[in-house]
Image 1 (tube, rainbow, N blue to C red):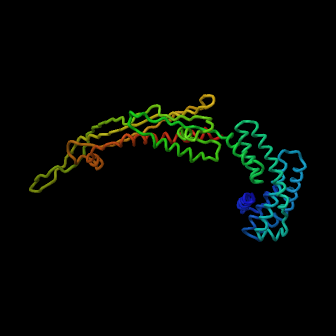
Image 2: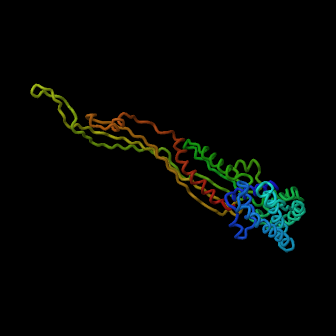
Length: 379
C-alpha cells in the first residue's frame, strides 16, 4: 500500500515540476501547492517562488489535513476511518516528498509524519469497508456486487487477509461478472469454405480485451461445456446470414485511338528522300474482370435467463477483386505507353474462394469489434 501512495507522490511531483505551486496556494489547495513546490525544488533547489510557496503552504496543508482527520473520526460518516486515513496518508506523502528534495528540506527541516497512527487506522478502515462490502453484496444486484468487490479490494489492501475477505472477493467478483457464451455458427459446408480464421480472430479479440480481471467474461460454447460453466448470463450468436463468393463479371470496352503526324514511309522528291507523315489508328479493347464477394454477419445478444433479445446488429462486408488486360487491332504506333502495357497483359486467375471469403470478412470484423466494445462498455 505504501508503494501505491509513493507512486502517487511521484505522479503529483512530476505533474507540478514546471510550476511553483503559487496558484494552487492562492486557490486554497494547500496540499497540491506543497507537492508542486517540492516538484519544482527537485529541479531547482534554489527556486525562490517555490521556496516561498512551500514555506506558506506546508503549515496550512498540515493544519487542514490534521483537522479534517480529527473531524472525520468524530463524525458519524460511514466512511470516516477511510477518510481520516486518506488525510494522514497525505501528510505522510508530504513527509516523504520533502525528505527526498534537498531544496525543500531546507525550507521544512522537520516535516511531520503519522506512520504510527496509520496501522490502527487501517484496521478500523478495513472493518468499516468490510461491513460496507457485505451490505452491498446482500443487495443482490450486479452493480452492488461490483461496489462490494472494490470495497473488499480496499479491505485487502489495508489489511491483507482480513477475516474472510479473500472469500468475499471471489464471491463478489462472481456475482458482479456477466458470463457470456459466444456461439459462432459455422459456415455451411456446401460452400467448401472455413470461417475458422474469422472465428479465431473474434475469440482472440474477446480474450485480449476482456481478461479475467474484468466484469465481463466470454467463453466459446465448447469451453463453457468442458469447464461446466456455473452460470450463463448472456448468449452472443454470430452468424453469416447471407454471403456470396466469386460472383464474376467480365466487361469489354472498345475505343478507337489515333495519333497524328506519324511517319508512315518515305518518298523521293526532287531526288531527295523525304519522310511521309500521316494519321494512324487502332482499336483498343480493354477487358475488366471483377470478382465480387460479399456477406452479412448477424450479432444477436440474448439474456440467457429470460430469452429476451438485448441487441441485434447486422454488419455488411464487401470485397471486389479485379484485373484488367487488353488487345488491339491496327497500328500499334497509335497507342500510348499505358495502352501498350495493358495489351501485354494476360488474363489472371482470382484468389481462391477461401481468400475471397476472408477479404470480405475483414471489414465485417472491423465493424463487429467496436459494436461489442460499445455494448459492454458499462459492464
